[in-house]
Image (cartoon, rainbow over all chains, first blue to last red; front, side):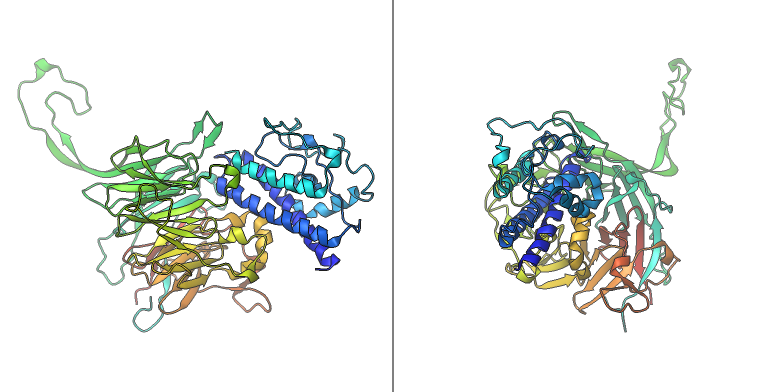
Length: 173
Length: 445
C-alpha cells in the first residue's frame, strides 16, 4: 500500500470512527436503553477502523504530513462509562457537532493540524467548539483506573486505550 | 409456484392502515403472523397494540374468491414501563407474536416486548343470558319481596363480541432485550430468547423458567457475539436452533443436557475473503432464522442474502439467494444512515418451495427454490386497485438504466419491508410496510 492509498484509507477509517462514536453516544438516549447487539456491532466497526487506521499510519511513516491525533477535551466526553473515555483523542471529537456530517470532519481536522507540533498535546479551551449537546462535566474515573498521562500519550497508546474503552462500553451492562 | 402452464402472478387484495404519509410512530408495524390455519392474521405495532384480522371464508369455493381479511379484534397488549433500578424505559413495542395451535373454541397467542411475554386468550361471545330472577336487565338488584315466580334464564343471540384477555404474564426473566419467542411442538412449552440467554417456559407456569442457553461471558469485555433469533423445530420437541450476530447457527438438543451451551450442530459458512470490509461483521449478523414446514431445512436472513441450510450439512448452506447485492458497494452510506442495522425477516410458503423476504423501497423478493427463479415486487398505494396484478420490478445496479428499472440511488431507504408472512396453506401473503399491511394473493387463472 503506497502512502497516498494509505492516507485515503486512513481518512476513511477516521471518518467511520467519527460516525461510530456519534452513534454510540446517540444510542445512550434511545428509548428502551442501550441495545447490546447494536453496541457490539458498533464496537466491532470501530475496532476494525482503529486497526486499519493504525496500520495505515505505520505505512505512511513519520512523514509528518498526516494529522497528529490530539487528546480529546475531557469536558467534551460524557461522564458515564458507556462511551469511550477522553484520552483516545481523534479530531473525531469534533465530528458529533455536525451530527450527520461526520464525513466532513476532514475539513475541521486540517485547520487544527496545520502546525501539528505546536500545542498539540494541550487540551483545548472551552471556547473551542465543544459540541453543545455533550455534557460539560468532567469524566468520572472508575474505581481502580488510573488517568493516562496526557502529555506522554502517543497515537499507539491512545488507540489501545480506545480498545479498552470499547470493551468497557459493552461491560456497562 | 408455477401454476398450470406458467408463472404465478400476484394480485393486490387489500391494504390496512392509514393512508397519509405522516406516520405516527406508534402505528409502525413491528410483527406479522398468520395462525396455524391462516384464518387469522395478527399484527403488532410500536405502540404495543395487537390487531387481529379474520378471513371471510364463506365464499371460498366460488371461482372468483377473494379472501378478505377484516378486523376481528384490537387490544393493547403491552404498555410502556419503567425500570426504576436501572433508570430505563421499557418500550411497549411488540417484538414478536406467536400463535398457539387451537385446542378449543378460543384462540391463544403469545406476544412479547423487550422484557415481558404475555399469553392472550381471544374468545367470541355471541349469546347473552337474559331473564335473571334476582337482577333487572340493567343489573340492578330487584327487591326480593317483589319476586313472585321463578324462571330459568335463557341465552339469547347478540352481536358478535370478540374479547381479548391476558391469561398469563411471564415477566422478569430477561436481563437483555427479548428478540424471539417460539412455541414448542409439544404445545406445553415455549422458549424466549434475549441477546445472551434462552429460557424455556411452561405455558401454565409464570413464576419460573428454565435457562437453557447462556452465552454471557464471565467478563463482559470479552463479549464477541450475541443471540439474534431462536426457534423450536416444528416436529422434534427436543430440538431448537439459535442464530448469532457472527453469522452462525447452533442446533441444540435438550435431551443432551440441562444447559445447552454445547451445540449439537454448528452451521457456519466460511467468509469469502474477497468481500471483507469494515462492515463484514455487521452484514453477516443473522436477523432471522426459520425452519421449513417439513423440518428438514432452515432458512437464515442476513443483511444481503437469504440462505437455506440442510440440517444434515453444517459446513455450508445448500442454497444462497442474493436479496439486494447492489447494496454491497453502498455499505458505508447504509452504516451512516443506520439502515445496515435493519433486521429483515424471512418466511417459507406452505409447501417450502418458495421463500420470501423484504427489502427497501417497499420492495419484497420471492425465490422459487425448485424453478430457480426470483422476482421483485412492490407494495405501494399506486398498485392498489382491486385484483391489480403486480408487475415485477428491477433495480439497475449500474450502467445504463433500462425503461421501468429503478436505479440504486433512487431507492427510498425509509420505505423498508422488514416483516412478511405467508399463509400456511394458500398463496396469500401479508407484507408490512412502515405503517400499512398489504395483503396479496395469487391470481386465479
